[in-house]
Each structure stands twice: as structure tokens, then as C-alpha cells.
Amino acid sequence: MEFLRPSDDPGTAVAQLEEWVAADVAPRLLIETSGSTGRPKRVVLTRDAVLASAHASARRLRDLGAGAGGRWALVLPSSYVAGVQVVVRSLVAGHRPVLGAWADEQGAAAYTSLVPTQLHRLMGSPDDVAALAAMQAVLLGGGPIDPALRRAAEKAGIRVVATYGASETAGGCVYDGVPLDGVGVGLGADGRIRLGGPVVFSGYDGDPELTAQTLADGWYLTSDAGRLDEDGHLVVLGRVDDVVVSGGVNVPLPAVARRLRAHPALEQVEVVGVPDEEWGQVVVACCVDDPDLAPGQLPDLAALRDWVADELPRAWAPRRLVRLDALPLLGNGKIDRQALLTAATAATAGEGVA
Image (cartoon, rainbow, N blue to C red):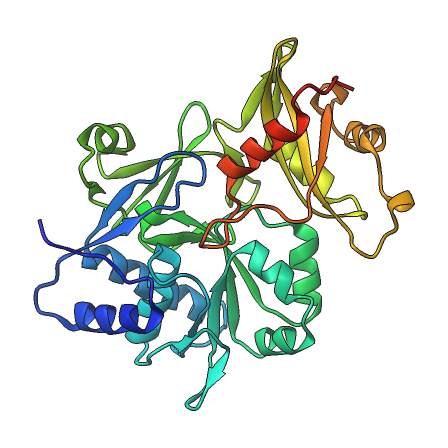
């Protein structure tokens, strides 16, 4: 079967996708996932699925009052689905995207798409903040969004739209908890999120077994747990397998991470479960400290355990703490959870449990 694999080079990818969008008959798109929590997968998308996503995104942004059409700035890798969608959305609107910047000789971009780590870093640059604030909207997805980061961005005048989706849904298909037109959202008995509609992928290249496990009657069965709030909006709770059993207690790692991210002395936080002979698994907090604070102003493990226990069960509190200069990232800007787990395991090897 013939596939189009988007290039890692942005200029080449734009040329490929421009021809692909305009072709009478187009091959299927092959997106290799990052493998942030396991082995990479080769996701197959039809042109119809990609275009359905691009058109639905444009309609939703228009409905939100963010304008119709307009150029997009590509600052994500062009071979990943989020980068592909930036290019396709811009092409569908009648423009080639701005590559690696917010503006070029043709003018400024009206939209962009970022992952949370990118926005966190850009918030430290007044010029970048001003450029983002001048846009119609900034789509933010690809991982958990720190509420404090979103508040800071919106206070600076940046119009943030939180997106949820995957390569298997041709990118983000739920905006601020509301599915795009034509997209269905369901929850399994275990809270597992399923997504349906014209944006869903065709399968995994070379892996019919995984395709059968993940694609059922046109629905993509995600690895994420969720719930619907009182307004019917989807709330993503984290990966189904992001619950570790520590000393016989089920600990939802995303909940612990959210609480730790609210600590004023921590700049970034991720939480992992590390194997332990006594406890089965122990919760490890991997933190990047606020660089403006002196070492004596930084919380130790006991203080962070108390911080978590103020709102959550003490049994959920981290039993180990790893301080990092930076969180490991994949090429698309997402957290590399496999590398993080390896680093946490190595850093805590032989340590006693607090």
C-alpha cells in the first residue's frame, strides 16, 4: 500500500501536503507516533479524516469568535500529526503556513498550535508573549495543562483553546471539553474514553492485532480515563495505566501531579511509579524547581508530602523526590515518560522510602 510520510523538514512537508490536499487521488497518510509511553505505532489516516478534522477545527474556531480562516504558524515537528494539522489547516484556509516563526514577509500568523512545555518556555519571552497575544487563538494540547500556566497565558492576553485527541483521531478533536462537529465521545464502564466520527484512523500499519484491540465499530478506544462534568464537557483524568498500586493502595498519578503543580516553589512536575520490593511501587515526584528561589526556600520531600496530604489521601503522597534541571522531552515537545521513568528509577535506586 502506498503511503505519504510527512517529512521532518518543514518546507518539504508543506510541499508534500500541498500536493496531497489538492490531488484527485491521494495515498493514505502514515504518522509514526512518538512512543511516549511505550513502543511507537504507525498510524494510517485517510485524507478524508485529516480534512474532516481541519474543516471542523475551522468551524469551531469561528464559532468561538476567533475568526474564520487565516494563516497558521508551524512550530511543531512537521512529521507528527499536530504539525501536519497546522499545515493542512493553513492550506485549507488558503495560505502556506509561517515556518518556525510567528510572522514572515507575508505577514503575521493568526493561529498556532503548541504543547504545554512550549508555552511554558515562551511565557518567559515578552516578544513571544506579545506575538501569541496578537493571534486569534493558540491551540494547546498534547499533554496535561497546568491551570496556573493557562491562567498566566490568558492574563497576558493569549486566547488559549485546550485540545484533546491523538494521532488516531487526526489530531485534537475535543476543544475545551466539547467534541468538534461530527465527533462522538463515549466512556466505557471503566471510564475509558472512546472517540468516533470521520476523523478516526484506519488502523495501524503492520499491526492488525493492535488495530483490532483499539479500533472497534468505528470507535477509537483510547488509553485515557475521563468523566463528563455537570455541563457535559469531557474531563481527561489521565491514562488508564497511570494508576499505580503502592502498599495495596491505588494511587492515580495525574491527581498527585496536579496537586504538586499547584506548589508555588515548583516550576514543572511529573509523577511516576517506580518498582519497589517492599511497596510494590512507590510514587516518585520528578520536579524542576523555581530557578528564582534559593535552595533553602525549596520544599523537601516531607514538605511536599504534607502539601499533597492537605487535599488528597496521605497514602497518595510521593515517597521519593527527584530534582531535575529539566524534564526529558520527545522531539514533539511532549514529556518522554519512558526516559523520565528510567531517570527516576536510577536516581532513587537503593534509597529508603520516606
